[in-house]
Length: 328
Image (cartoon, rainbow, N blue to C red):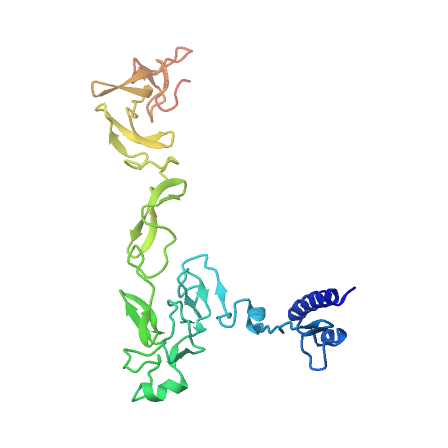
């Protein structure tokens, strides 16, 4: 093999070895194996001349391998939100633009108590409590009287962590940048401050009866009819057994027609009449019991006759009926 060919082969091998070394962290051993000179240069010397192969310099960021995010980032918490991000599910972090809960201790993503994440201004850093405060270099010159609890220069209306109220709902003061905001829940659809299980107007069911959710004060209730005395959901016009006037003009009593409470006309037959009754021209008509049917109370000899309790019991032996004892 001629000298030019040797040079090309050595160069190719060295290039491949150099790339491999970059990936695993070094190739000092390979430089010695190929006899590239005492100085460690990557040059290749051939009989016909010298071919210089530039050395490679690759610096890999430790942070990129450690966290997968590059040299910076807030890796303390990154939880994808399944519900609305806020104080309830992100009490020690802040909420990003995508509704995720972040750790809230990085200068670019700073906040706590479920407040919106903010980027700290120049000369500020994010404290472990999720507050933008001026760093040591800028505080001495930025504020004549020293920085406030949120890292700003102006007076605050309260102190971080103190109780505050917004629209009737209680919360706590938190820092937002160099200022202070009241982190409190927004009023719900009923004017209260707690989360509602549903929305007013949405369908609901109570005891098998359908209704819709509505507000009762500041809370949500299912507005559905109660189960009536007949087991149905229709509103009862009256109590079962109470007197009523039917649509045909006859009096009656409330009773069950399936699972519905309805006015049942003509429910009061005489002693020698039987149900069901019929309403005719606003008057009740009943079928008569058979003649001779015992009727009345306190008289052992009273029997029905032509639909009225006016008959007298005839004894089979021809004797006289005793009102107290009946026939002998």
